[in-house]
Amino acid sequence: MIEPALAARARRIKVLLFDVDGVLTDGSITIIPNANSSELSGVEVKSFSAHDGMGIALAHVAGLKVGWITKRVSQVVAIRARDLRIEHVYQGQHYKVQALDQVIADEGCTLEEIAYVGDDIIDLPVLRKVGLAVASANARPQVKAMAHFVTEHPGGQGAARDTIDLLLEARGVLSQTIEQYLDPENVEAKKADIGVGNM
Image 1 (cartoon, rainbow, N blue to C red):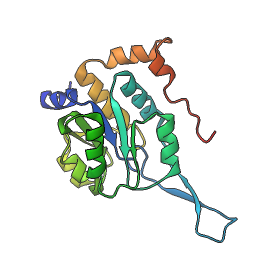
Image 2 (cartoon, one colour; image 1 turned 30 degrees about the vertical axis):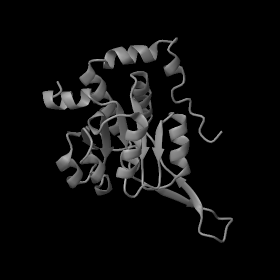
Image 3 (cartoon, rainbow, N blue to C red; image 1 turned 45 degrees about the horizontal axis):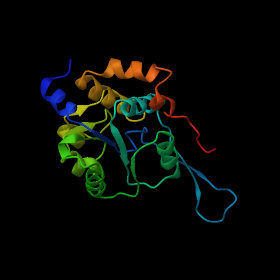
């Protein structure tokens, strides 16, 4: 049972935004050096949760818009965002409020209609503004202290899915959305996370 004030916030959400490292991943940044180069270069590796990917697919079926805002710039993020058909992707964002303002302008929505999921202090300026501030279970204490909701699972292990389930449960459409996704004729579900990866 969702607490009434939280449910009211969640029902207003039209756009769901995520930090990446520590929210959509466990925060690990693995760099494999390029052995064939004298320059400092390498390949960055991140791991994403398939449960979160399914959650994002459900969010799309339910009509939510999804965005990612991250300080790091990574080809891995661009590839995963493409596979999941993320509408708003902002990399290289030190002050994330600028990306938030652009999302508001592009979507024609209000701050109250935006949820943001973060885990570290760089996320605080956005979390302080949006209608639903969410901290992943692994978030720093400062983030958890001001969040309206803390996920059951940590980043990279279902934090995004927890948030999406909350939004759909608050609307009373979680079960319905799951059945829509499972419908073999559902066009949105067919397009979801086809996993083209590097191909």
